[in-house]
Image 1 (cartoon, rainbow, N blue to C red):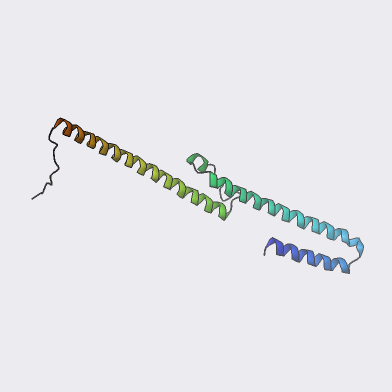
Image 2: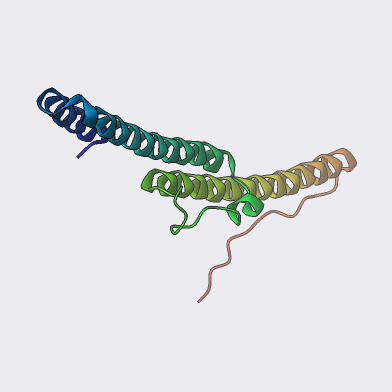
Amino acid sequence: MTIDKRATILFDDLFVLADEIPSVRIQVIRDALHAATSELQNELEVERMRLAGCGVAAMANTEKTKADRLTKDNPYWSSSYGDVCAAVDREMKYRTSLEDMTESRDSWKEMAQNLMLREIEARTLKIPVAKHTDRKTK
């Protein structure tokens, strides 16, 4: 049952009781309403903190900040928080893969440039360049 529905049922029941009982007991009803309101405010504050935790987790995309994550036993941990953490983990993995591919590309690019420079030097100096031949094994 949602918080709103619980609060509506509670308030409806209390207003019916207030019409049927002496005014002396109205203070008891006020106290009950105050306690219910306080409980709902506390629940709302927990949900606000959970939402804030999702925002913090979304920005915590380094190995150092990953170590500081909330654990499931923390009252501010939620399924949504876990989903955000999983998405951040994927982002970190993709970033690492991209860095590896970029490094590999740069290495191949450097090798290609060196080969082209050798080819240019060989042509300039009119030195024959060794051609690639297929080796067939018997």
